[in-house]
Image 1 (tube, rainbow, N blue to C red):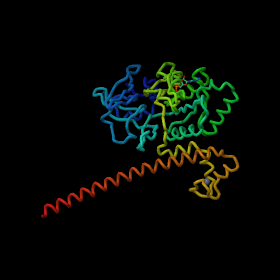
Image 2: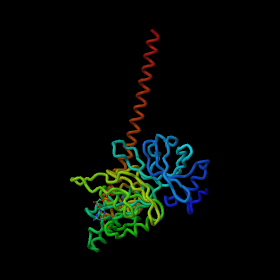
Image 3: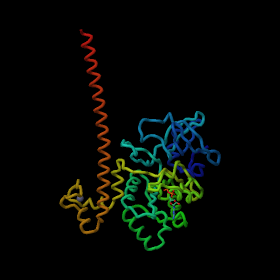
Image 4: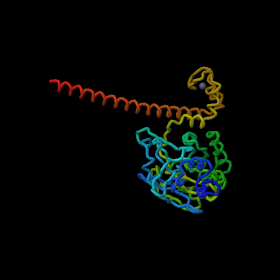
Length: 365
Ligand code: GDP
Ligand code: ZN
């Protein structure tokens, strides 16, 4: 069977000529391309071609497991899987990777999804618009390599068209380079426009728990893919309403990765993401007198000047500073971890040396 992407059964799952090229050197008897739906304790669930259709297979990940947390295979990865032995033989190079700092104290990144083209940031209109949060997700999205798209959900709760237009405009001002769409899974408003945006490639839904991701996923896929959890915590914190990560082909083309709601999103080495999420600030910075201007109190700072004359909203500047600070802190934290490791290593060597010296002394007596 040719692995040409046109009319390939896996094209509904995002297979294209680029991935076909990536797979070409890995081909062999019984080895086929597959897309990873889910990874669980050394095994993964992949979707592979089966005649004109597809089927799911389980495979062992042991051969491609590395110690690097960023290299752990995840939903959305393309793999060469040996159907005869049941082992994943290799991962195809990733185009994009969605990484967040883990919610634990350790600052290692965790890959949430691979090969994502569209990062759909769901923001609920049921609560007050938090642009800082939108910017945080945008930064993360840009950093992944995917193209962000902001979706203001539950638009049916904002009956006045002019109010809705204002909310969209405010969001657009906080999301340079990203499209902003108002949608309602309830009435279907904006859903076709969103489906058209997602028709090519792989999309992922991001956003706080309760933002309406599961409901939107159901609407987009036209099936009840997740059980929408009706009961929510009284304190409004909610619980993860999405418990599985799935790869869902969309009827109008494209494929959706439904990930658990991201809680406590942190930044992981997202310097480029910050630059893109705050593109207008980066553009202003080109006119700062000093190359390494911190836009703090430096003379001739074009960013501060723009904030002063109102061209740049103060809120944007504050948000930018906050994310830059957070990013710097994350980076220094991983450096600190590295330093601690080096120190530990050195201590062990020192102790071993002392033991040897003691043994020598003991032997000499
Ligand atoms: P998730 O945690 O992001 O997956 O959010 P859910 O899809 O579970 O939705 C959270 C709540 O918002 C549920 O009670 C949904 O019924 C409600 N909801 C979702 N979409 C809409 C919508 O378009 N309009 C309205 N009014 N409510 C919605
Ligand atoms: Zn400056």
